[in-house]
Image (cartoon, rainbow over all chains, first blue to last red; front, side):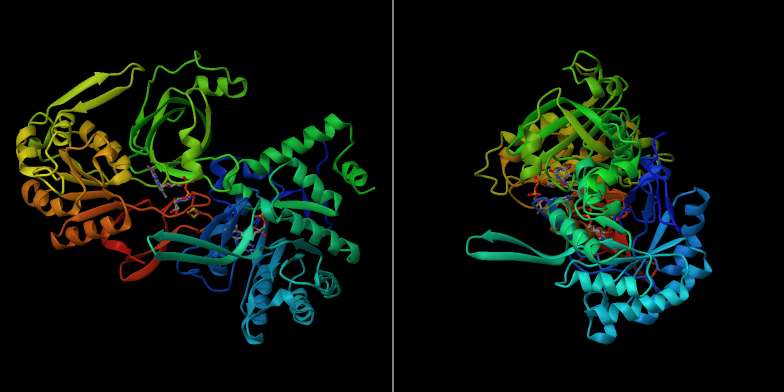
Length: 304
Length: 326
Ligand SMILES: Cc1cc2nc3c(=O)[nH]c(=O)nc-3n(C[C@H](O)[C@H](O)[C@H](O)COP(=O)(O)OP(=O)(O)OC[C@H]3O[C@@H](n4cnc5c(N)ncnc54)[C@H](O)[C@@H]3O)c2cc1C
Ligand SMILES: Cc1cc2nc3c(=O)[nH]c(=O)nc-3n(C[C@H](O)[C@H](O)[C@H](O)COP(=O)(O)O)c2cc1C
Ligand code: FES
């Protein structure tokens, strides 16, 4: 057996392939297609304090090589997650990371407390949410606001703390440093890129249009994600989990090259629901075929 | 249990204007009416969902197909065949149109829920023979059992009608009932609009198998777009215009429908007026197809509470009375 493990100290992965938040639910559907225990870890759908119904209207828009979504964080809420989903994940021995989101700092702090109480091994914090108190400016776009948020979460939560950065900023380096200084254990990048889908239908001179403003994901955002991961690694020492448009082995190697320790698969799970497990196999085969000793050796060579 | 599968195209043909019938192999042993498959389209992010229009076991599909080493072995087990009917829309359907016999298809199935089938107990009249339906069972070249009903004849009759004297192109439903020679009681009335006929055809096959008497009326914009298999066809006009007459005549217990939103809404209105249950198959753009991404949700009103439901996993079939229209 080839060693594909990634050891973050506080958190251990059998292999570097994770499934991204919002694309794998709470992991109770994909087990129809594959053995989810063979995935490095699954990241849950973003969970908020209260259950959320999500956005009205059109939620999906396919673009060339991508997808715009405006789901609006529809989720069952932390209480239902703890009562209905947590036991199952544990019973099946699924390695998971809880993704959390909030409207106020207090929301996040409470979610951190609950995560600590429930001994959840790792949480990923979605900071691409509008901060209601700061005029709905996103938490993850202002370094001061992000530093305060992460510090407060850190106080309450002792497990493996991952902050998921948004690419919709000009100063990703400053934000990465804010996260590091506030005591987080890891950065994941990137969340979706702001985008707009425009659909036009004509009936003579009458135009029927539909605009879908949301987050762009999928193959088309990979170059943005690679650039962000590289820029973060240039300034921060924290380990980085890379994501954005990954759909095959080569994409994954590109992220390792720019410094990612592990990767997440998002939108590609929809296109190819067996991808996460298949990629782990392909990676092991590739390492053997090329003659690397293990994943660590491969990463070293990629980063030389 | 949902599966990620590979199948081989067994048949592909044009069956009406811009309408294609695609049949492919499957190892699945059963699929319920209303369920759908989600087909991978190369170079597209999203799979494309299509209703199952027919499913049969024991197709004679075997190893004499073109050689696809990696999937051949897997497909030796593929004794069943799934049929979908699709209308050409954009890239996805145009890609599928170009497939040929022997080509490979990557699909997820069976997805979604199913129409509920009324039980036919306590109603001895509702057996196929008692209701007077003429059913001819045949076995086709691949060994698939198909049920060809006399309705094909009726359809052909419609086609021959003088459209000028019948501007809506509608057939007299009474005449149809006569032609089939039914006692005019039908447990289920099926209403298909356009390509929405696809799941209705499979539902009809299952109802027939269970000897639940039924009548399928479908509507098409033009004669060239007519897809065979209904008991009655409306061309040009609205299929809905015929529904009240059919309800009065057949006194069905349940309405089933699939088609554009406007048609489904009208089916629900008619059902409500007649105090009938309506089950409708809905459509929404989908990403995951299995209920996790929440991209395809609609709103339902159940027990005085409003709740989200995913079309892909909680649906696509919903009780018409519960759907809140956007
Ligand atoms: C449960 C279900 C069953 C369906 N059954 C059938 C069927 O039996 N026969 C048939 O012809 N069509 C069916 N459809 C619609 C079919 O999926 C679309 O026509 C098809 O996806 C169009 O793809 P395209 O690439 O050719 O067109 P596009 O150019 O991508 O789109 C044309 C239109 O198709 C719809 N569409 C596009 N992508 C999707 C998607 N991922 N999911 C749902 N709708 C989409 C949108 O309304 C869009 O405006 C069904 C849809 C659903 C949700
Ligand atoms: C339908 C959908 C829902 C998502 N929901 C969440 C979410 O709840 N929380 C979160 O942090 N990211 C969410 N994301 C973002 C993804 O986790 C990921 O960061 C992004 O899609 C980029 O990766 P990809 O290109 O591989 O999809 C969602 C993405 C999609 C497509
Ligand atoms: S398509 Fe993902 S929930 Fe229905």
